[in-house]
Length: 198
Image 1: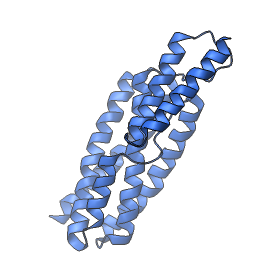
Image 2: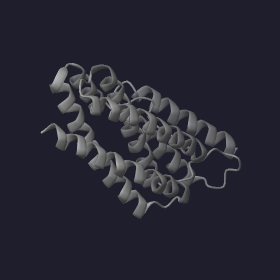
Image 3: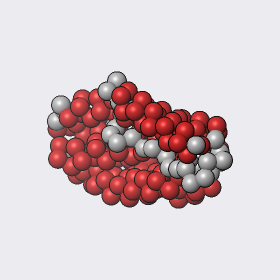
């Protein structure tokens, strides 16, 4: 009976997420799905064999935000590969695609093992940034792309540093600690490019 109740709750949660996805961004839908899984796990931790999320809400929120940021870095950098005129910006974009695709793949595998739902697409605000950037060209594009990469990497490094200190799940902490040096290197690299554009 518990299995049937659990199955019904998961179906309702999935239906709710699916029906709300028309009005929620992909990141909001992922956060909602993870919250539902955490609530279900708290209510019935005795359900044998049930696929429960294995991390707390803070760690799952970090995973969703990191996935959203990583996908956005790749999307903006793919745009830069076709639109950038500055050779260093193009080179940086290539590095972003390689490094962030690798990190995104690692995060997806980790999330799957922890039953964390990740967003399927970038958030609405990040999509708007990509849309706005796609309308630019030449030196304006290069400047805005590098400015965006600098701003995003400052925020991302800060987010990863916070998660490194506060992560409860050891596997998520290991992912963070492995990825953080690369993010810091990206930040230094993009700062150097920005300084050279002045």
